[in-house]
Length: 140
Image (cartoon, rainbow, N blue to C red; front, side):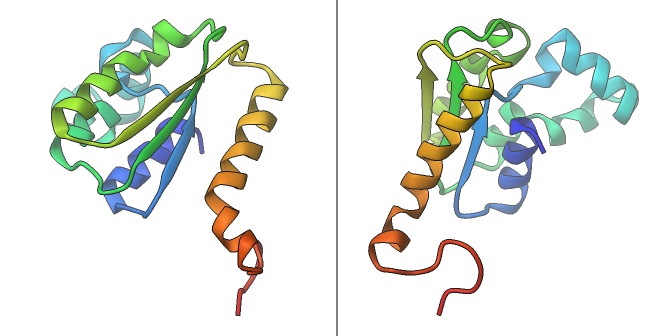
């Protein structure tokens, strides 16, 4: 699942946390998203809103802080990712968002995924690591 899928799943189920790496956040507003939605969902644009993170956050904001990482060297940042649209939607909905711009990272860099994910794991699992709980598997 990509970053867009993680956001949609979170906003529809309200998991306790979500993070996304370089997601397309407003597919209804970018040509690539419009093309994909038309192919997969048909021409009825009203139904598309259920699969657009910028639209969903306005209807059903989450109580969790959403974490998004995007590289400042990402050639797709302004089209089709458009993080500014999601930032605006979150502000209007009162949704807490931590939108981090990663210096020097691009969309295809293997280092981007590794570096960002290792930081996310350290941050999200730091309390468990401090208290000696297992990070993987059943913790007792």
